[in-house]
Amino acid sequence: MLFFLSQSYAQEVVSPPDKQLSIKFSPQHLFVNGLHLYAEKLPEPGGRHGFVLSPRLYVGNSKTVDVLAGRNWEGEEESEVRGYGAEVQHKIYLNDYASPYDRRVYLAYGANYHHFNVEFEREGWVRETDPEGLEVYRHRMRPFHEKINRVGGVGLIGLQVPAAEGVLLFDFYVGAALKKSSISTDYSQVRYDRNAFDFGYSGLHFVSGITLGVAL
Image (cartoon, rainbow, N blue to C red; front, side):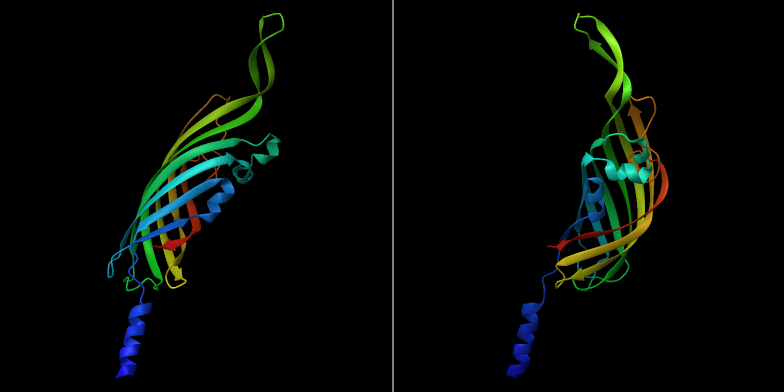
């Protein structure tokens, strides 16, 4: 009798509380000076629907994006990018949520918006005042700006894997994304729209990645 009572008490003690929220980040976006955070309202026990809000911030140079987009051969100094954005997602888990220990397969869809301001240096005409007070034009390296507004949608299939008694979460996903960018520039041509890795890309492309975080 005492054995069964102690065993029941032990199970009650180690049983984790239901998690209501998870906070994650995307490590692969750190390589392009981007910080993607994900806050998800977890499904209730027995539920299958999760809702995600993902704010994004970009600050730093564009070296990695330049390499992936094929701009590194131009021999220019690194560009600087400042940007922000957000995405909302609806997740549909395909297996029941019985406990935080469960691995869960899910489908997800969402919509996003991003704004980027990229500054880079190229040769161009600059109006200057010479020592005699006359305004002259000189052809030299000067800064240019490209502003990008991008909207998009995404569809994913993923696997969420818990660890450390359900506190740590590893989320692996693959899918497709559709992007549409509106770009303005004071350079002679648009520069940041070369391929799916670029800030101003428009089109359909494959996506994959991982997010890491904790359940609260």
